[in-house]
Length: 158
Picture (cartoon, rainbow, N blue to C red):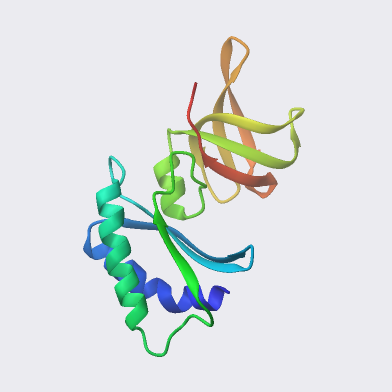
């Protein structure tokens, strides 16, 4: 299925870039027997609105329908949307954007007796991240090896 993504990503990305928007992620998945091409887009600094998503959806749909040969082996549903406030952090650009932002991490194994943390990302490199977390009534710094991170996403602080 990644072959389809590899074929259509450059086409989709050029349309999104032309509009000053940003391709966040793409997935081509099967759910309940149907194929879905999901494209997540955003706009800096304030996010993307529904009118821009609708315009992009129409342009992307028209362009994908005109590709020859057709990269899709069977019918599919096209979905364009915002990735949402709590979207996953996947790319180098996502990590850069997450710096000094509130994030959620899930771990493969416990660090200081917990497998889930939320806090402000203070720094990161290829080997580890540093979070500022709340520990009861005080704030403390937690260093987590990146190899222990199962998932990471932006989070909303309450």
